[in-house]
Image 1 (spheres, rainbow over the protein chains, first blue to last red):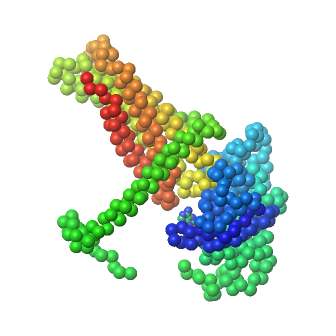
Image 2: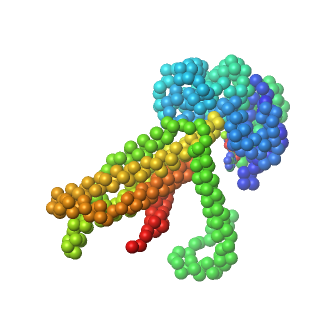
Image 3: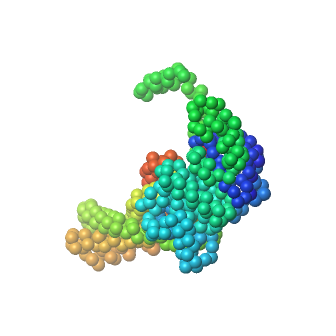
Length: 249
Length: 282
Ligand SMILES: Nc1ncnc2c1ncn2[C@@H]1O[C@H](COP(=O)(O)OP(=O)(O)O)[C@@H](O)[C@H]1O
Ligand SMILES: [Mg+2]
């Protein structure tokens, strides 16, 4: 369980998060939406401990992360998997080596065991045939899938997704959404997804929170958000230009 | 918004404008701001240096990363080292012999070339040549990893990015440079021998006896000690520039060129100071 309590964060006078209260329930898919530059990635960076809140607390497993040493953060992160916005695959390694990387680093498993796990994870994302390709030769959608296989290689308890479907074509978007749903169902992990893709959000989310102007303006089950009367949220969902949403910023 | 004041061109016009607009009043602030940036950079450099040395001695030990860097910095620089050694040995010998003949001491040439190469030119040229190849390559590789979030990905997977990326390169640079310098020196002496004895017809026995007269073991070690420092400097500059790269592909390009320039300047500066430290006047 990960929880934000009154988290504020500013960069050089620009208030990006303002007293954000947010909980990511165990075993559920929580999607945080908000327009580009709203500070969604900043939220993920707080969960990973790359950034520290100016005020407030980020609780990881019910523990106040404010006192974590770098070593403790590393221990916590071993239970996390992260899918970066642009996949962040290691381009000096093949597809296989990328997925095997966390296993080699953090387990004592034999080569055969690792190869077996990698095979299984690649099968899950439908990329067994690309196993020995270099990552440079992959399309954006394939890179995302390799990155997903790498993120779940260690069977993490929490998987973080930074805009998993941005910049992908509709078909690949559907593939990724399916993968998110299926892998979550299969593993029962906590999934935290950052997105500005509304259609995709409603397809996968159990719970939706919306970030606007540094604050959480709605934080509710997906069904509730879909039928919300809140003009601000409604406008964002429907992508309209008129309404309370400050379109030009 | 008020229009930008027109900046007068030319030194004298600028000087009067400086007085007229009382820009000198801002002088402390400007120096302060520059000073702050420099202090921050120095702090970053110091912290990265200490951290990369500290984690070098902590587990896990990824030997493969070390051998890979030794191969990259050493093996792949072999051609450039051989070429440099051969060219410098031949050129020095030819020019020196012409000058020394005026003083009827052309037989000294082997000794002089050996001394100059061992103490000074071997490590310096080896350092500069490898710097051109390696500092830029390191800065480009690590910089590209930074801007494409690969370094964040390492940290997100609980891997110490300094330990993974920087420590092996520093170690490999400091270890392999003296060997490369030795190779460069040997090739230079081979070229020198060929030019002096075979081309210019000097006496082979004199050639070798002057080498042992003029060059002491200490001279050779002084050169090798320098090359350890150069190997450390050029890899560290590449790592530092790459690690703190910002701003996409353009940032990577900038980091790459800066690494080469800063690396070579630091190598030459430290060459002078290490040399003056170890110099004992007769
Ligand atoms: N490490 C950082 N240093 C300075 N500013 C940052 C940093 N990270 C994010 N920001 C700023 O915070 C704001 C939100 O960024 P981000 O979370 O990446 O937006 P998004 O919602 O599109 O993911 C942006 O204005 C960005 O410039
Ligand atoms: Mg983002």
